[in-house]
Image 1: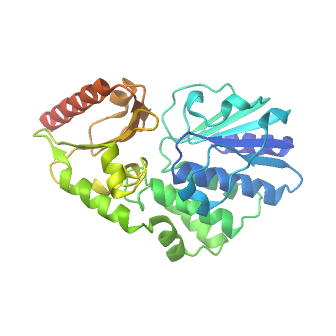
Image 2: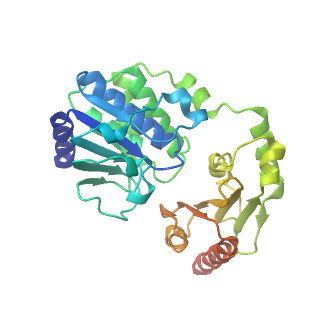
Image 3: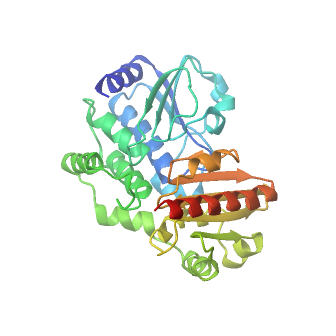
Length: 319
């Protein structure tokens, strides 16, 4: 691992223009790793041109701003992709011509980007990997950068509760705390503060979650539900980890209909059955126990729920 980190740091030093991208529909890990890496490079190489690109998400503005730049005007670019295993899901890739590419990702391998590939499925988050990269460099590390890395690690590990949390996760967080002045209480408030509408929406999900005899819990959230509770189509995805400890439930999934894009957004979590192989059948993917799907075919949702229910049955029968 030390060799690949050295290669990445060498490439960063070599290039004057660096573009940092992540997956579409980002979560805090994607946004925070992207902004933290950009800011860290700029703080240590102030003469470089470093841009964090992609569509903005209003609720994530508190972590930092993205760059508005005409990517077509850039040349001799080093592209660094974060938290994304396949090129088609990189936000903004169609607008850029790059000379070399680096992938930093904690998802299972799906596609070779034809550059430097640093993949660590055992990492809790991409922020953990970026923190490891920066901690092994001779970079100075600001409180702002460390705070974003901490937020991404906490978010993707669900406050260190998910099985992707390891001893290495805690060592890296400990190093961040030793080297900077992170205010954990303020950061937790920043990450988990919610409007009352979302609290009530959480209650709606709890009241309407269906559970099959095999241990699949699911809910299909309509456009009318979204409007009634005055939330957005991504709100449910931010709540899915809250349902991790229901007795008798092995897999749970939230399906949200996005009327604007005529799209079903599916978030899937598991306490044992492997779900990413099922998600891949429907052009989705992710981790073994945390995956997602997007489809505009309603029949796919029916078939997906049936497959997940069968996997729950097989898992329970094998115990």
